[in-house]
Image (tube, rainbow, N blue to C red; front, side, top):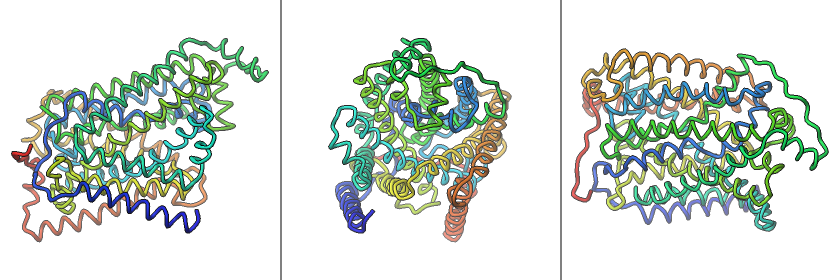
Length: 524
């Protein structure tokens, strides 16, 4: 990128940031977040955080990343759902007793220790914020491909230029930042229609996949390219299967965003657990049916052959069987699935930062609530700034997978700590543990949390080994050392603010043995 483009990009970013800040930052007078989110908006938050365009790519590109997975993609998906469901149960248990903004931070800080609560949630915040930038950056090629399919060649050419791609990605990101700042009504009016549209367009893939079989595909391939497929054959391997499950587990990350919105949920002890359950079940069923339908129409050995040669997606695979016009709708579905990620993930990361500030681990200014919109506007803006770094980093590095790997590491650690929190809460904080309103049986809690901890630990080991043994041009392209550096930064930040609280005479033992207080305001 030229110096002129760099300077133009800086001017564009700061002008847009100033415009947003000018119209949103007012002197805050509200002291707590209003509880306005119902079951539908909570479930939509989790669903949209979980479902992204990866469903259009990962189940097929896994044939390249995990050679030999062959016909076992769907079983690997099912197995990956097990630790995800157990982690969701842990969130359900903890959320019923601690319905506050910043869910995972509150859960771990009150169950294990303030330090573990902060560093785990800090890495989660960092990983998800960078992922928001990555998602914003990745949307652009999908829009470009839609333009190409519609033969809008000039627009497609523009979107292929580096500067235009970055500027467009920044515009998308900051539009959703503005929507999040404007409040829950704007958030719901954006998120829920997009979710409905996403499922509707995804249904095209499912119907198309179930309408054809392997013989139809073989005939279409022979007619279009004169190719004859080899016979299906693959031997099952546990190491390959487990590696595939660990990779596919990343598709279930996101339901925790419901817990982060705990401070804004109506009747949280009831709605939070149910919303998490609805989100996990809905997404799991969608993933399974979607993946099954594609492999029902397209033989896995063709997918494996093509994945070794080039990047493949659901629209590309189905293009052999359906009219090209329908591919536009499938691409549009993928683009909307990505767009859906942004408002839900922005809500999640901003509420984490808000909860740190409430406890005094971050500057109190970050816990400010907008007097008109009743949102943590400063926390949203700061999180948006980190996401902006994710966009720029993806562009200048020429690769976005590092950010995704960091997010996966962060979330595996986070989910593991949630399971441990369920085990330790009755010992460290019996008063809060007595408020658990779901899975009340202590024996059942132990079974769920222990099983989840064991499986998540295994997935974490597999993920770390894969990352550290991967060949790269430099150490900083491994996600593990980068994640460790982030944890070290988090540790420094924590102990600096911890000592500051001590000097101010704050009784930290009392502070972290109770939940943040909620105050009312007439403006609510």
